[in-house]
Image (tube, rainbow, N blue to C red):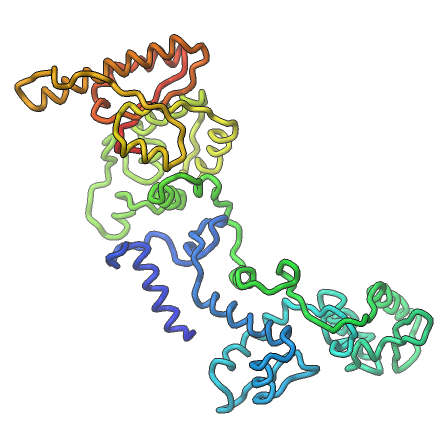
Length: 439
């Protein structure tokens, strides 16, 4: 794949990610290099097309070394020839050769740096200059002995003496050894211990792969080699959480939410003041952690698990430490759906939550008001009284009450002032109220 094609395709990916299906030109909040890293390292798990293309081309180098007499390999062998003992094709120079195979051949070096020979008969593996018994060639491990060797290009089969008892290595050198060279010879023989030819065919295997097999995913990871950033991935990529919520948490952890301070950096002329508290400047850490309005909500949530916590400075630190605090012990929460809506039942069921449906069971037609807004509030108050009464009856009946999350519809505004939150905090478990639009 030409580099210009890869760049154009990645631009389409970036525009789709940040602009949505309409391909709008919106702000790209996170660097593409970060987006293309693994989820465990802070990215979205997308692939850099140029690196993916290298990994896919590298697989053909692996196949050329592994496949025996496939037709495509015979064509390449006849057209370009092969090097050494048939493991690699020759380089296509000048105008000779198809462009595709020229690009494949360019990936030979890094592929062979991650392949090692498995010795069979040993007739296709060179003793000194191929990688077979250690991570590097013997000529690199013992350069002094390699300079003294008589047969520098011999195969393993030629270096093995089958006639000496059970067989042994026939190492010939140009001269006798000095005393200080005997230790090197001993190290070489120790390294060769346990290695000997067999009746099988010689083969290669991939160092980084499972069962010695080349896999594009592992080759891609090898090429990218991204460093671990300590990203709290396990508290971000949680099952049964809506995709938009997960994506926002990922952005917030990197501190890339489009708050007023970031808009000002991009040249937008707006006064920077938190719209919730109106006291301090707005940034991602303030609006999600330190704002006094947000802290009130945090106190309610932490009250469910009876946790008192001094918050860290950044969202990333909250995600890193908070997962162990909030999700370490198993939290059993009772969910009550205060609505007869079939749609809301379906949403909770699809998310995998166990919940109890608690309806008001009132006669709405019997409530009369002249103004529509008064009628809505009157119906809401009647539903609230009925649901609160049922909640209190259940709590008095059960000795061990659980933390309760009440999901309500139009009853939210009326239920809120009636919930005995203070009493719950002292004598029982707290109740958290959520409107249906938040589910």
